[in-house]
Amino acid sequence: MMRPFLPLSRKPQRRCRADWAAHYPGRVIEDGATDRGSVTTVRRVGETIRRPVGEWTPAVHALLTHLETVGFVGAPRVLGIEGGDEVLSLLHGEPAFTPWPQALRSAAGIGELGRWLRGYHDAVRDFRPPAEARWQGQEEEWRPGMVMRHGDLGPWNSIWDADRLTGFIDWDFAAPGQALDDLAQLAWYAVPLRPPEQQQRASVTGTDTLRTRLDLLCATYGAHHEAVLDALDALQSREAARIERLGGQGDEPWATFLARGDAVEMRTEQSWARSERDALLGAVSD
Image (tube, rainbow, N blue to C red):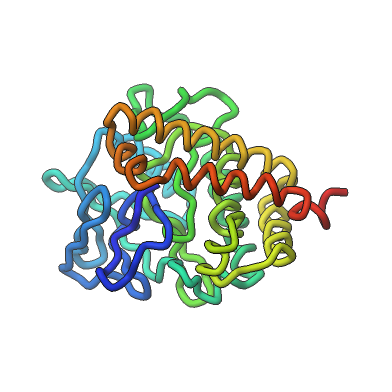
């Protein structure tokens, strides 16, 4: 997962997979400004975001176009390609960097995330990827029963307009997968199901609070808590192994992830989640 661009005065608190469509913590990038993320460079022109295309861009555009066609409003719109850049609509609002805004720390906020993800998965259920589609970081070929996962569902990619969730940005890591894995990833980073240090950075702390937030997220999405924690454990194993495998081969961006210790961090967080499983399920395991 790639780190967002941050001003030099801000230390990144969490890796995320790309450049979060040119949003600064606390404000939207100014018209005409250019920002460099850990993977790519983005530029705002009016109400649009421009950034370099990749081999996965046509597949992601097909997905975003489908979402627009079915009326799903919580994602950027594809406006075209100019030269070597894709052109996307700008989602207005603020990304949820640490310490999290009150909107995300609230019960209403975690509920909004669950409803957004349920709405997205409902909207994408009948999407069939083009036969020639190439997805960045794809692990499996699409087959019936899968959805197109967003693939980087962390608060850094959620955009908030006051207390309202506008949507999610940075779809470059969308790929075929299981819907439950998207929910598990969202729980991992937005509950957050992470050790105390990360909880403190988010200003969301304590097992009781995490259990309540997990309960709300699962209830608004419509899933069982045990299944989400099982999916999270498997997801953390796969993500760490992928970083080690592809990073060890020198493939970017995984080589960067490996060098900065992401795989080790994921395994540490997995161990924490395993140790806290019973506590997290304590009030909801009936």
